[in-house]
Image (tube, rainbow over all chains, first blue to last red; front, side):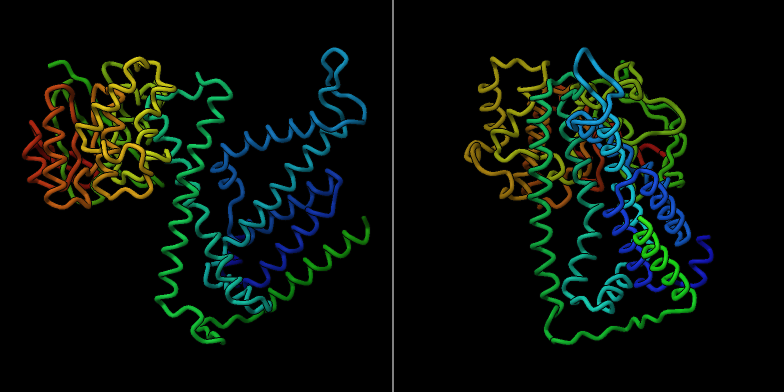
Length: 246
Length: 219
């Protein structure tokens, strides 16, 4: 499938519109089965464009435990429905709670899939795609830079976490309050470094005459192909039909 | 000699690329060994394998007789002090004092009763006393380097791994670092990774040469 997407070199606008469709459905639909179908379609599309959802999921292993924790919390604090698991007279998990938790997980996975679809185009192509869709260049540039910096920030979180442990701190032996206190130490240097990086970046882009002229020209010329039109037709029809039926 | 670090037949792949091949290395408890080699030869990867940050596929790595794979990073951190190439990576508290006192709150190997005394002593040794309550974010590169090393040594490690400690330091700062290292040379073992032959010559008992993921000789 990925080979086909390379062959046709899809327009980034097609990908952006498909992501818009997926995220709209993810936001509006509440039924677990429907959300599951949207996710499956999203995974299929990301695979078609050359992304690998399951490989990405493997990289996000640590985040998954946090997601599962949030699902359990959602489930615990949702009242109503019939109980699935009780301790004494307390309903720990109800069917409505479980539904909300699963819905949350599916929505997050749909967002991850959307990110993966966007990541199959280069930053420069994606900026051009956003501009051609009518959004200001500054906004497109900001978005692309933001996406580009995400892995760097994740890397810094990891480095600080390692540095803390290398001070002889064993997380497993710490109490919950100590863990929370240490978390603030992880956050602070990452935020400080992000501010520093953005300062340096702003100086760098200013030095390269960013926004000197009102109109910005580009060497990249985007053109819809027949395959783009076909995909857009399928995505928009599918989305509208789903919304109409539900 | 009683070996503190024992690396046997280690092979490591990163992104399906072989970065280390059949590495064998033994370092005594109070021995100072340096590794030199061109960029990308695998020096930093090897040091990260020794402290358990990077996983290896074949062979064994043992610290004081214990397999690294069986130890947590916290356990390794109590034994080994690791100085990153970029000190910004390991300074994470808002002030110099907090950076030095951090481990006292969590590392049960340290005696909390000696906390203030030890901090004052290390501040004195590393010429950081005047910066005790300063923010860590506005320190100069040399000060950051000294603070990173001080915060490692206050943990009283048994062994030090220094990854390119002279990077970005001018001659004067290198001299200061050299004097500081001399002070600790008889107390603990050191693995020194560097490009700087002059610096290495001053400290190392033996120097290993790495190229393309292999140790190709000893100088």
